[in-house]
Length: 420
Image: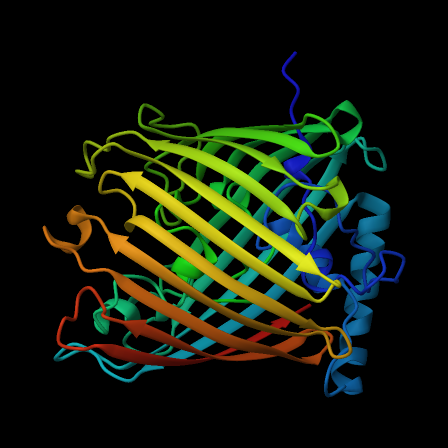
């Protein structure tokens, strides 16, 4: 029997971004930080992070106490039925210093999300089976959305990942099952492969960076939510393997379950960490991916290699890097290098981040003679209350590929997120 790993059981952002908080600290609704392989923006990770205790810079007792009956009710659902629920609203506004002629120079969007995990099999054991789901409503405040503002400025990329106006979105709808006493596992159904592969602990569009090229590796033909099956397994206490197959034509707006699987996105990964408990603090992995030709969409076959690494010092500083090389026009870039750092302010649950990306767009994306792009992002997440945070940030685009008349473009952002 194929051994399958626990990357469906995910580690919460409290473990990734708040290492100073002990696991024994009482959470508001009792949502645990599961060990696993998924990224910090995965549904189960975000459920645990939103429930984790915080130390806000400016405590708002009325706000926190008003929500406590809701968290008490959620605790009862979790204890009695194994059902965990999360509700959040995230808002983002961005403004660019320069744009192409006739384009808007600002953008705003909001996302309402309902998510959950329902443990229906072997609850309380290491071999839990759970139904995981998420539902978004993504809407705009202005004529342009943050997903499109980069192109309006001539930057080949997305400075506001996820923030669009595609309205109702069914994200996750999958079954996640662990085996072998929690050492192996499976995910099957509709999910986002980017939540499980080439994962590093700093990347979360809800709470950290916003630029796609910094959050993910743009040399990968980043698959969207789609039907697929993924497996993974710990080889020992330090090494793990992961692999998955998905519908390469899957999108956030096109919900298809187990249909049109003749064109596939496949990926495999091997990774190392000093220990399982440190796999997001200290990690090195190599990922191979392949995207079949998409005949109807007119996208050629593509494949590539990605390398990711991060290392955490004193439970406070994290440095990270991503490297990627690919062939074909499916990815945003054919070569990419990202490097950056995080600093966690434990006394206030705040987070500071700085990162840069260098990318060489493929000819199929930016023409026969694509120019190299350099971009950077600096943000500071200010925790105002246990479930309320604002994140001002600034992005910089050097030599934007689609706007040769501009050498430098600046973009200012403000994100607000409330979760309950």
